[in-house]
Image (cartoon, rainbow, N blue to C red; front, side):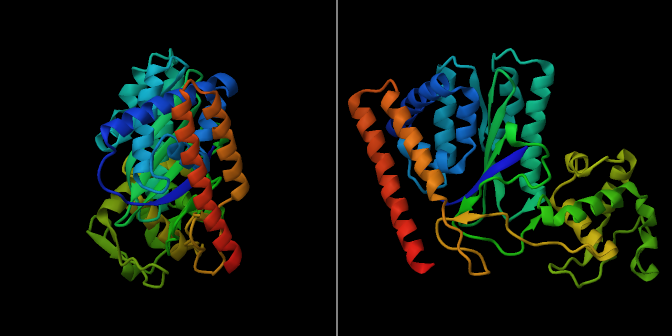
Length: 374
């Protein structure tokens, strides 16, 4: 399995007006119908998992090309559109409290899914949220998740997190996922890079993952054998001190974390994915285990934002990563064809195509600026 992209978007407040949302639902219904009929359900979900294509799709149905509302509003419109179409594809979840309805909505989807497929969908939803919250600690708090799934049990997940100024979007696709915790990124795009991001899914942190599992499989009361006797208080006490020479300092390991280590030891996870899936294994536990692996076993943590492409400029090393123009060209051309074939009147088709052309013009400006500064 592979998470297929991340996008950063500036936060915009407010809601889409009702007339716009109704138009978005109608356009979503027409475009999704022609894509599913002509190219199949898998291809439709594959397109949605591509952040470039999703951005183009949102623009075509009428939303701002570069807004945090792109995700929540477009997913909401598409969810209603797929409820109207009987094409074997549904969406569960949404923004805020609606994301907590995913399991209920999967069960009520009327797609005749087997119990095994339902459990796999529920697990995918849980793990995608867990990984983008705990394993990729980039400072963005998740507030939106939808899972798009078909009657074969294949799925695509779109979720979004926010910090004070921006939203970041995460895409997942079932056919690309072999592991939820081993470098799931496929295409990552956004506006800004973050410093000092703990990403334990990175291949560069493979040894950190292994050491974390080794730590919890060993009796936590024997941590004393790894550390100077004076730094470890009694296991029942509040905390013990950690050395202060990590890149990001942690001064104490709480009793709550020690209690989790005992729980994980009793479970004996076979691998890092099983460890992450444990109840109570959140960002603090993942971070503590990574720091312990560094301090006790000498495994160096790589603090690197998984973002790969940007609309603006590159990372701290000074090397920009441009938007993939070929991918965007193909995405826009695919949408052009779908719009032309969709069951829409000429006026609706013309406006959708105009919005797509406007997006292309804006991106062309970005690419031209990039070519001048490189």
